[in-house]
Image 1: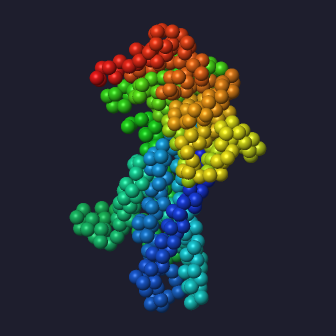
Image 2 (image 1 turned 30 degrees about the vertical axis):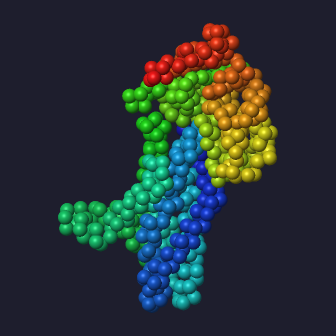
Image 3 (image 1 turned 120 degrees about the vertical axis):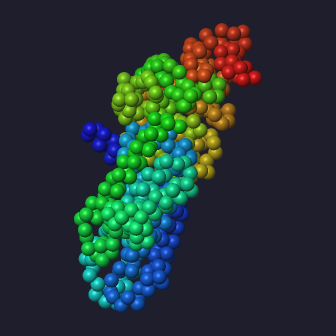
Length: 254
Length: 242
């Protein structure tokens, strides 16, 4: 067991270093960060009318995080496994004395690091509200923290999906659809339809599985342990699926 | 050092490898021959732990690839078919990645990387992107990766494919130099290089072993030498199809 743990740690270390390098060795990370920041700025200032709210907080900024993650994070995770399958390096990877769980964790952490860098680069927003008023900085920090955890959940879904296909484009499209399901389950429009069709009971159950519902309280800077555990559970579940799908490929189903 | 026991693998209806078993001792260089689709690569992938056999087992220095895969893989160097590499890395970065995966410590790592760069003769391209390397260099970088952990068992899937005659000779010399200390399994299409490179040869056809012996003994089975033996034993699939 302890040997397994060591092989997992080694695998995570090796794949984390390699994937993080790959993100920044190609324009991918830079393009991702630039476009994400641009879109986030656009939605916060133009769509949410940041200045017109008259309040010194970042709620209109955090409001957009789930939606932008849904569209953009699969672009980070799409290459994680599908690229290995397409270029044949998965064969090399599977011959190394490391556990698949380790590889999956390392890959996820690398993508998550790019997301963290992106979030850190939104600091001008934080400077702006602090310049304009006296916001609750603890609340803002908590919102950022939950946003980062939620990004991990989106990336875990995308990474697992990329292990099912050997095309990045397919991994992206399926990843966005999967992310949409987890996001939109709590969208009033979807929720209303579900409640009408299947009853409010089912509607409430669906809502508890939605990223939107769980992020809602965090947007206002309230840390709910329930939501934190939910996101961590989602991440663990999708890492497990990821490992399962990669192992399945190994047993040569195809 | 390397023991294959009764390996069976099928993909759907198609039986790719059918009860392949042999053992390989230290100092042996085994040429694994067979027509396209005979099951060479599938067998080698099972040895490397890349795919799991339906039946049978592989022992690498006594460690089972089924029950103790990581222990077995620690003693193995594998060059997959086509020598796949990460295109965005340089050879040095690639070797560093492999060293991390093999959990070599800092001092060991430096020594191991310098050793394989010299052995595979890739010093002059060590800091160029893999994507820009020629086919021959890519194969040598892959080979360097396989040698990094100084494995007991080397599994090389077509290591000389696509190399020019000078490079081929260099790879053969490298294999000859390492041979006394290791058990080496090599698949190849080029029959001419088998006597020069291997001291044993196995011919596989449609997933089954059809011949096993020294290159000389296989060559002496037919008046036309190794090539004719190969065609007599393994050419039947093509003849059936025709």
